[in-house]
Image 1 (cartoon, rainbow, N blue to C red):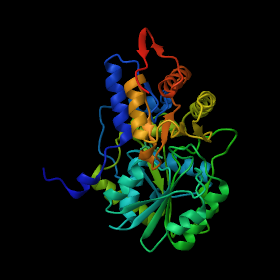
Image 2 (cartoon, rainbow, N blue to C red):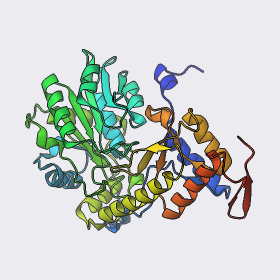
Image 3 (cartoon, helix red, strand yellow):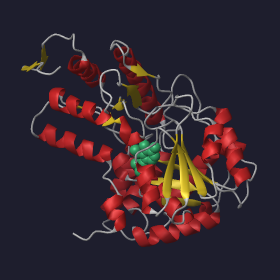
Image 4 (cartoon, rainbow, N blue to C red):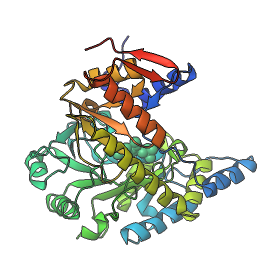
Length: 405
Ligand SMILES: Cc1ncc(COP(=O)(O)O)c(C=O)c1O
Protein backbone atom coordinates (compact mmCIF):
# COMPACT_ATOMS: atom_id res chain seq x y z
CA UNK A 1 0.00 0.00 0.00
CA UNK A 2 1.24 3.47 -0.78
CA UNK A 3 1.54 5.29 2.52
CA UNK A 4 3.23 8.59 3.19
CA UNK A 5 6.81 8.89 4.33
CA UNK A 6 5.54 10.11 7.71
CA UNK A 7 3.11 7.24 8.09
CA UNK A 8 5.86 4.74 7.41
CA UNK A 9 8.14 6.30 9.98
CA UNK A 10 5.81 6.91 12.91
CA UNK A 11 5.51 4.14 15.47
CA UNK A 12 2.40 3.50 17.54
CA UNK A 13 2.62 4.83 21.09
CA UNK A 14 3.92 1.79 23.01
CA UNK A 15 2.30 2.91 26.24
CA UNK A 16 -1.15 3.33 24.66
CA UNK A 17 -0.78 -0.03 22.90
CA UNK A 18 0.12 -1.74 26.17
CA UNK A 19 -2.86 -0.19 27.93
CA UNK A 20 -5.08 -1.58 25.22
CA UNK A 21 -3.48 -5.00 25.62
CA UNK A 22 -4.11 -4.91 29.39
CA UNK A 23 -7.75 -4.09 28.77
CA UNK A 24 -8.20 -6.96 26.31
CA UNK A 25 -6.59 -9.44 28.72
CA UNK A 26 -8.73 -8.15 31.58
CA UNK A 27 -11.91 -8.50 29.52
CA UNK A 28 -10.92 -12.13 28.98
CA UNK A 29 -10.82 -12.50 32.76
CA UNK A 30 -7.02 -12.75 32.97
CA UNK A 31 -5.52 -11.58 36.29
CA UNK A 32 -3.40 -8.87 34.69
CA UNK A 33 -1.34 -6.40 36.66
CA UNK A 34 -0.77 -3.28 34.66
CA UNK A 35 2.48 -1.54 35.54
CA UNK A 36 2.53 0.09 32.11
CA UNK A 37 -0.22 2.54 32.88
CA UNK A 38 0.49 6.27 32.79
CA UNK A 39 -2.48 7.51 34.76
CA UNK A 40 -3.60 7.80 38.37
CA UNK A 41 -6.40 5.54 39.54
CA UNK A 42 -8.27 8.20 41.55
CA UNK A 43 -11.53 9.80 40.41
CA UNK A 44 -11.63 13.17 38.70
CA UNK A 45 -12.42 16.04 41.13
CA UNK A 46 -16.13 16.49 41.78
CA UNK A 47 -15.95 20.14 40.64
CA UNK A 48 -14.73 18.95 37.24
CA UNK A 49 -17.55 16.44 36.87
CA UNK A 50 -20.26 18.88 37.97
CA UNK A 51 -19.03 21.55 35.55
CA UNK A 52 -19.05 19.11 32.64
CA UNK A 53 -22.47 17.70 33.51
CA UNK A 54 -23.97 21.16 33.88
CA UNK A 55 -22.80 22.04 30.39
CA UNK A 56 -24.01 18.76 28.89
CA UNK A 57 -27.42 19.26 30.48
CA UNK A 58 -27.95 22.42 28.45
CA UNK A 59 -27.93 20.22 25.34
CA UNK A 60 -26.11 23.01 23.54
CA UNK A 61 -22.56 21.90 23.03
CA UNK A 62 -21.02 24.07 20.31
CA UNK A 63 -17.80 24.98 18.55
CA UNK A 64 -15.46 27.10 20.62
CA UNK A 65 -12.42 29.28 19.77
CA UNK A 66 -9.40 27.25 18.59
CA UNK A 67 -7.19 28.47 21.46
CA UNK A 68 -9.56 27.84 24.36
CA UNK A 69 -12.62 29.34 26.02
CA UNK A 70 -12.16 32.55 28.08
CA UNK A 71 -13.10 30.80 31.35
CA UNK A 72 -10.33 28.22 30.93
CA UNK A 73 -7.80 30.83 29.87
CA UNK A 74 -8.69 32.78 33.01
CA UNK A 75 -8.14 29.69 35.17
CA UNK A 76 -4.79 29.02 33.45
CA UNK A 77 -3.74 32.65 33.96
CA UNK A 78 -4.49 32.26 37.67
CA UNK A 79 -2.57 28.95 37.76
CA UNK A 80 0.38 30.66 36.05
CA UNK A 81 0.34 33.41 38.69
CA UNK A 82 0.25 30.86 41.49
CA UNK A 83 2.92 28.45 40.26
CA UNK A 84 5.10 30.62 38.02
CA UNK A 85 4.67 34.01 39.68
CA UNK A 86 3.99 35.36 36.21
CA UNK A 87 1.19 37.59 34.98
CA UNK A 88 0.10 36.75 31.45
CA UNK A 89 -2.62 37.91 29.06
CA UNK A 90 -5.18 35.59 27.43
CA UNK A 91 -3.16 35.96 24.20
CA UNK A 92 -0.25 34.23 25.96
CA UNK A 93 -2.33 31.11 26.60
CA UNK A 94 -3.58 28.23 24.45
CA UNK A 95 -5.69 25.31 25.67
CA UNK A 96 -5.19 22.10 23.72
CA UNK A 97 -6.45 18.53 23.68
CA UNK A 98 -3.93 17.41 26.27
CA UNK A 99 -0.39 18.57 26.96
CA UNK A 100 0.42 16.19 24.12
CA UNK A 101 -1.30 18.40 21.57
CA UNK A 102 0.13 21.54 23.17
CA UNK A 103 3.67 20.18 22.67
CA UNK A 104 2.84 18.95 19.17
CA UNK A 105 1.49 22.30 17.94
CA UNK A 106 4.36 24.12 19.66
CA UNK A 107 6.82 22.01 17.68
CA UNK A 108 4.85 22.55 14.49
CA UNK A 109 4.95 26.28 15.16
CA UNK A 110 8.71 26.45 15.57
CA UNK A 111 10.35 23.54 13.76
CA UNK A 112 11.31 23.50 10.07
CA UNK A 113 12.16 20.27 8.25
CA UNK A 114 15.63 18.98 9.21
CA UNK A 115 15.80 21.18 12.30
CA UNK A 116 16.60 19.50 15.57
CA UNK A 117 14.98 19.34 18.94
CA UNK A 118 17.09 18.15 21.85
CA UNK A 119 15.86 16.34 24.97
CA UNK A 120 17.65 14.46 27.74
CA UNK A 121 17.39 10.66 27.85
CA UNK A 122 15.52 8.81 29.11
CA UNK A 123 12.74 10.76 27.40
CA UNK A 124 8.97 10.59 26.97
CA UNK A 125 8.13 8.23 24.08
CA UNK A 126 6.30 10.90 22.08
CA UNK A 127 9.11 13.48 21.71
CA UNK A 128 11.00 11.70 18.89
CA UNK A 129 7.79 10.91 17.01
CA UNK A 130 6.51 14.48 17.37
CA UNK A 131 9.78 15.82 15.95
CA UNK A 132 9.39 13.40 13.03
CA UNK A 133 5.81 14.54 12.45
CA UNK A 134 7.23 18.02 11.86
CA UNK A 135 9.85 16.69 9.45
CA UNK A 136 12.39 17.53 12.15
CA UNK A 137 14.86 15.41 14.04
CA UNK A 138 14.76 14.46 17.70
CA UNK A 139 18.16 14.37 19.37
CA UNK A 140 18.40 12.55 22.71
CA UNK A 141 21.21 13.54 25.04
CA UNK A 142 22.59 10.86 27.32
CA UNK A 143 24.13 12.16 30.53
CA UNK A 144 27.77 11.14 30.41
CA UNK A 145 27.85 10.14 34.04
CA UNK A 146 25.15 7.52 33.36
CA UNK A 147 22.66 9.10 35.75
CA UNK A 148 19.13 10.30 35.05
CA UNK A 149 20.19 13.89 35.70
CA UNK A 150 21.30 15.71 32.56
CA UNK A 151 24.26 18.04 32.72
CA UNK A 152 24.29 21.33 30.90
CA UNK A 153 27.67 20.50 29.29
CA UNK A 154 26.23 17.30 27.77
CA UNK A 155 23.40 19.30 26.20
CA UNK A 156 25.72 22.09 25.11
CA UNK A 157 27.84 19.59 23.18
CA UNK A 158 24.88 18.46 21.09
CA UNK A 159 23.67 21.94 20.14
CA UNK A 160 24.57 22.80 16.56
CA UNK A 161 23.44 25.04 13.74
CA UNK A 162 20.30 22.91 13.20
CA UNK A 163 19.17 23.01 16.82
CA UNK A 164 15.93 24.91 17.23
CA UNK A 165 14.58 23.83 20.58
CA UNK A 166 15.19 21.93 23.79
CA UNK A 167 12.50 20.02 25.68
CA UNK A 168 12.88 19.52 29.40
CA UNK A 169 10.53 17.27 31.34
CA UNK A 170 11.04 17.37 35.09
CA UNK A 171 10.08 15.42 37.08
CA UNK A 172 10.74 13.06 34.28
CA UNK A 173 8.75 10.34 32.60
CA UNK A 174 10.10 7.61 32.77
CA UNK A 175 12.86 8.10 35.38
CA UNK A 176 10.92 10.03 38.05
CA UNK A 177 14.02 12.23 38.39
CA UNK A 178 13.39 15.86 39.28
CA UNK A 179 16.19 18.00 37.91
CA UNK A 180 17.92 20.42 40.24
CA UNK A 181 17.00 24.09 40.47
CA UNK A 182 20.53 24.85 39.36
CA UNK A 183 20.11 22.80 36.20
CA UNK A 184 16.77 24.47 35.37
CA UNK A 185 18.33 27.91 35.93
CA UNK A 186 21.27 26.97 33.70
CA UNK A 187 19.14 25.60 30.88
CA UNK A 188 16.89 28.69 30.87
CA UNK A 189 19.99 30.87 30.74
CA UNK A 190 21.64 28.71 28.08
CA UNK A 191 18.58 28.81 25.80
CA UNK A 192 18.29 32.57 26.15
CA UNK A 193 21.96 33.05 25.31
CA UNK A 194 21.79 30.69 22.30
CA UNK A 195 18.39 32.02 21.20
CA UNK A 196 16.78 28.56 21.38
CA UNK A 197 13.20 27.72 22.19
CA UNK A 198 12.82 25.96 25.52
CA UNK A 199 9.74 23.79 26.01
CA UNK A 200 9.26 23.05 29.70
CA UNK A 201 7.01 20.02 29.98
CA UNK A 202 5.81 20.53 33.56
CA UNK A 203 2.98 17.98 33.44
CA UNK A 204 4.18 16.25 36.66
CA UNK A 205 5.41 19.36 38.48
CA UNK A 206 3.14 18.97 41.54
CA UNK A 207 3.49 15.20 41.86
CA UNK A 208 6.77 15.31 43.78
CA UNK A 209 7.97 13.68 46.98
CA UNK A 210 10.09 14.05 50.10
CA UNK A 211 9.08 17.64 50.75
CA UNK A 212 10.19 18.93 47.34
CA UNK A 213 8.53 22.06 45.95
CA UNK A 214 7.67 22.64 42.25
CA UNK A 215 10.45 24.52 40.45
CA UNK A 216 9.46 27.70 38.67
CA UNK A 217 11.50 27.96 35.45
CA UNK A 218 10.16 31.47 34.75
CA UNK A 219 11.94 32.74 37.85
CA UNK A 220 15.25 32.20 36.06
CA UNK A 221 14.28 33.93 32.81
CA UNK A 222 15.99 37.21 32.10
CA UNK A 223 13.94 37.83 28.96
CA UNK A 224 10.55 38.35 30.56
CA UNK A 225 8.91 40.13 27.65
CA UNK A 226 7.33 39.11 24.34
CA UNK A 227 10.78 38.06 23.06
CA UNK A 228 10.88 35.14 25.48
CA UNK A 229 11.24 31.78 23.77
CA UNK A 230 10.18 29.85 26.85
CA UNK A 231 7.08 27.70 26.27
CA UNK A 232 5.60 26.29 29.48
CA UNK A 233 3.35 23.27 29.08
CA UNK A 234 1.05 21.82 31.69
CA UNK A 235 -2.36 20.17 32.01
CA UNK A 236 -4.97 18.48 34.17
CA UNK A 237 -4.29 14.88 33.11
CA UNK A 238 -1.87 13.79 35.80
CA UNK A 239 -2.31 16.12 38.76
CA UNK A 240 -6.14 15.94 38.71
CA UNK A 241 -6.35 12.35 37.47
CA UNK A 242 -8.16 13.61 34.35
CA UNK A 243 -6.26 11.80 31.58
CA UNK A 244 -9.40 11.04 29.59
CA UNK A 245 -10.57 14.65 29.60
CA UNK A 246 -7.71 15.59 27.28
CA UNK A 247 -7.04 19.13 28.43
CA UNK A 248 -3.57 20.65 28.52
CA UNK A 249 -2.16 24.08 27.76
CA UNK A 250 0.84 26.15 26.85
CA UNK A 251 1.90 29.62 28.01
CA UNK A 252 4.30 31.50 25.76
CA UNK A 253 4.81 34.74 23.85
CA UNK A 254 1.82 35.99 21.86
CA UNK A 255 3.33 35.30 18.43
CA UNK A 256 4.00 31.64 19.24
CA UNK A 257 0.55 31.21 20.76
CA UNK A 258 -1.08 32.80 17.70
CA UNK A 259 0.84 30.43 15.41
CA UNK A 260 -0.08 27.45 17.58
CA UNK A 261 -3.75 28.51 17.55
CA UNK A 262 -3.72 28.81 13.76
CA UNK A 263 -2.32 25.29 13.46
CA UNK A 264 -4.63 23.82 16.08
CA UNK A 265 -7.60 25.56 14.46
CA UNK A 266 -7.10 23.47 11.34
CA UNK A 267 -6.19 20.25 13.11
CA UNK A 268 -8.91 19.82 15.68
CA UNK A 269 -10.31 23.24 16.49
CA UNK A 270 -10.55 24.08 20.18
CA UNK A 271 -10.90 21.18 22.63
CA UNK A 272 -14.46 20.19 23.50
CA UNK A 273 -16.17 22.88 25.57
CA UNK A 274 -17.52 20.20 27.93
CA UNK A 275 -14.00 19.12 28.78
CA UNK A 276 -12.63 22.64 28.97
CA UNK A 277 -15.31 23.48 31.53
CA UNK A 278 -14.37 20.35 33.47
CA UNK A 279 -10.77 21.61 33.54
CA UNK A 280 -12.03 25.00 34.79
CA UNK A 281 -13.89 23.13 37.54
CA UNK A 282 -10.71 21.27 38.53
CA UNK A 283 -8.46 24.33 38.42
CA UNK A 284 -10.84 26.60 40.33
CA UNK A 285 -12.37 24.00 42.64
CA UNK A 286 -11.30 22.35 45.88
CA UNK A 287 -7.62 21.43 45.53
CA UNK A 288 -7.36 18.67 48.15
CA UNK A 289 -7.46 15.89 45.53
CA UNK A 290 -4.04 16.90 44.19
CA UNK A 291 -2.39 16.59 47.60
CA UNK A 292 -4.27 13.34 48.32
CA UNK A 293 -2.99 11.91 45.06
CA UNK A 294 0.55 13.13 45.75
CA UNK A 295 0.57 11.50 49.21
CA UNK A 296 -0.83 8.23 47.83
CA UNK A 297 1.81 8.17 45.11
CA UNK A 298 4.61 8.86 47.56
CA UNK A 299 3.45 5.95 49.69
CA UNK A 300 3.13 3.72 46.63
CA UNK A 301 6.63 4.69 45.56
CA UNK A 302 8.00 3.69 48.96
CA UNK A 303 6.28 0.31 48.77
CA UNK A 304 7.51 -0.38 45.24
CA UNK A 305 11.08 0.66 46.01
CA UNK A 306 11.20 -1.47 49.18
CA UNK A 307 10.06 -4.49 47.18
CA UNK A 308 12.41 -3.85 44.27
CA UNK A 309 15.32 -3.76 46.73
CA UNK A 310 14.57 -7.40 47.54
CA UNK A 311 15.41 -8.45 43.96
CA UNK A 312 19.15 -9.05 43.68
CA UNK A 313 20.84 -7.28 40.81
CA UNK A 314 18.00 -4.86 40.00
CA UNK A 315 19.28 -1.29 40.11
CA UNK A 316 17.15 1.82 40.32
CA UNK A 317 17.16 5.37 41.54
CA UNK A 318 14.36 6.26 43.96
CA UNK A 319 11.94 8.47 41.97
CA UNK A 320 11.70 12.09 43.14
CA UNK A 321 8.26 12.48 41.58
CA UNK A 322 5.78 11.21 38.91
CA UNK A 323 4.44 7.67 39.26
CA UNK A 324 7.16 5.76 37.48
CA UNK A 325 10.17 3.79 38.57
CA UNK A 326 12.74 3.13 35.85
CA UNK A 327 14.67 0.08 36.92
CA UNK A 328 17.73 -1.55 35.38
CA UNK A 329 17.06 -5.27 34.90
CA UNK A 330 20.02 -5.87 32.60
CA UNK A 331 21.54 -8.26 35.12
CA UNK A 332 18.67 -10.60 34.19
CA UNK A 333 17.97 -9.72 30.57
CA UNK A 334 19.70 -7.20 28.35
CA UNK A 335 16.78 -6.78 25.95
CA UNK A 336 14.00 -4.77 27.58
CA UNK A 337 11.51 -5.95 24.93
CA UNK A 338 12.31 -9.59 25.67
CA UNK A 339 11.96 -9.00 29.39
CA UNK A 340 8.64 -7.14 29.05
CA UNK A 341 7.33 -9.89 26.80
CA UNK A 342 8.42 -12.59 29.26
CA UNK A 343 6.64 -10.76 32.09
CA UNK A 344 3.40 -10.56 30.10
CA UNK A 345 3.56 -14.12 28.81
CA UNK A 346 4.58 -15.83 32.03
CA UNK A 347 3.11 -13.81 34.89
CA UNK A 348 0.73 -11.34 33.23
CA UNK A 349 2.52 -8.21 34.42
CA UNK A 350 2.60 -5.37 31.91
CA UNK A 351 5.65 -3.10 31.89
CA UNK A 352 7.09 -0.73 29.30
CA UNK A 353 10.47 -1.65 27.74
CA UNK A 354 13.11 0.94 28.56
CA UNK A 355 14.34 1.06 24.98
CA UNK A 356 11.14 2.95 24.09
CA UNK A 357 12.43 5.77 26.31
CA UNK A 358 15.92 5.55 24.83
CA UNK A 359 17.52 3.24 27.40
CA UNK A 360 18.00 -0.47 26.84
CA UNK A 361 18.11 -2.91 29.77
CA UNK A 362 15.57 -0.93 31.79
CA UNK A 363 11.83 -1.33 32.24
CA UNK A 364 9.35 1.31 33.40
CA UNK A 365 7.11 0.30 36.26
CA UNK A 366 4.14 2.51 37.10
CA UNK A 367 3.17 2.76 40.75
CA UNK A 368 -0.10 4.55 40.05
CA UNK A 369 -2.12 1.43 40.94
CA UNK A 370 -3.04 0.03 44.33
CA UNK A 371 -0.63 -1.21 47.01
CA UNK A 372 -2.02 -4.71 46.49
CA UNK A 373 -1.22 -4.57 42.78
CA UNK A 374 2.28 -3.28 43.49
CA UNK A 375 2.95 -6.05 45.99
CA UNK A 376 1.58 -8.79 43.82
CA UNK A 377 3.16 -7.45 40.62
CA UNK A 378 6.66 -7.20 42.06
CA UNK A 379 6.29 -10.64 43.65
CA UNK A 380 5.36 -12.07 40.24
CA UNK A 381 8.27 -10.30 38.52
CA UNK A 382 10.68 -11.60 41.14
CA UNK A 383 9.38 -15.11 40.68
CA UNK A 384 9.59 -14.89 36.88
CA UNK A 385 13.20 -13.74 36.70
CA UNK A 386 14.85 -15.33 39.70
CA UNK A 387 16.28 -18.74 38.72
CA UNK A 388 16.41 -19.66 42.41
CA UNK A 389 12.71 -18.99 42.98
CA UNK A 390 10.46 -21.95 43.88
CA UNK A 391 9.13 -23.85 40.92
CA UNK A 392 5.51 -22.87 41.44
CA UNK A 393 3.51 -19.68 41.97
CA UNK A 394 -0.21 -19.30 42.59
CA UNK A 395 -2.17 -16.46 41.05
CA UNK A 396 -5.56 -16.83 42.71
CA UNK A 397 -6.31 -20.51 42.25
CA UNK A 398 -4.22 -20.72 39.09
CA UNK A 399 -0.95 -22.61 39.50
CA UNK A 400 2.00 -21.36 37.43
CA UNK A 401 4.94 -23.65 36.92
CA UNK A 402 8.38 -22.40 35.95
CA UNK A 403 9.31 -24.00 32.65
CA UNK A 404 11.92 -21.47 31.56
CA UNK A 405 15.53 -20.83 32.56
C1 LIG B 1 6.10 13.73 29.93
C2 LIG B 1 4.70 13.83 29.44
N1 LIG B 1 4.32 14.94 28.79
C3 LIG B 1 3.08 15.06 28.31
C4 LIG B 1 2.14 14.06 28.49
C5 LIG B 1 0.78 14.25 27.88
O1 LIG B 1 -0.20 14.49 28.78
P1 LIG B 1 -1.70 14.78 28.31
O2 LIG B 1 -2.53 13.67 28.84
O3 LIG B 1 -2.04 16.10 28.93
O4 LIG B 1 -1.71 14.85 26.83
C6 LIG B 1 2.50 12.90 29.15
C7 LIG B 1 1.54 11.79 29.29
O5 LIG B 1 1.86 10.65 29.48
C8 LIG B 1 3.80 12.78 29.66
O6 LIG B 1 4.20 11.69 30.33
